[in-house]
Image (cartoon, rainbow, N blue to C red):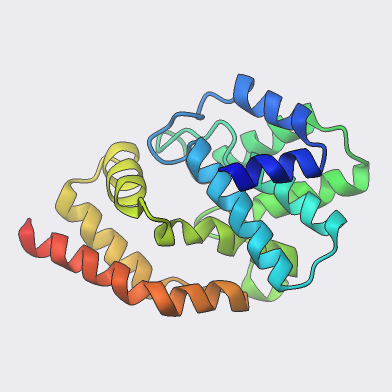
Length: 202
């Protein structure tokens, strides 16, 4: 989380963080919470550096990552409504140009699941944000965040259903950037073994 705070300070986004912390009802949700948001910010930065993006491009991505799940309903609404709210809240807080506002709105849309922007139409920045959002399963507390927080608490699945859904999801997960593909190749087999072990105990 310290990297996220450093990036927010570096890009002078303190007002946006203040808005996020005081206006976001999902900040302590089981999955779509502050921790997930900061993970996405940090993964965006790591992938962006690997892709040699400019600082203005990285700044736009950090802003999109900060707002991409703003006010998430954690399973109560469909994701198109979640995304629409996140876009609206970003625009409410925005001090950016119209051009940058449009870029951030399009970036947030790239995270809507099931995906509504085809692979062929994704920009590099949209690929980065989508990969960064998906990389939660490679974080150290992936079991608490995904198996418990997302699947059981937010989506109301039984422990067994949650394991089966996550195994299916991981086996079909697609990444776009070299950085994310490298992490996936290294850690996916370990994550699959962990969920398969849990499944065997249920």
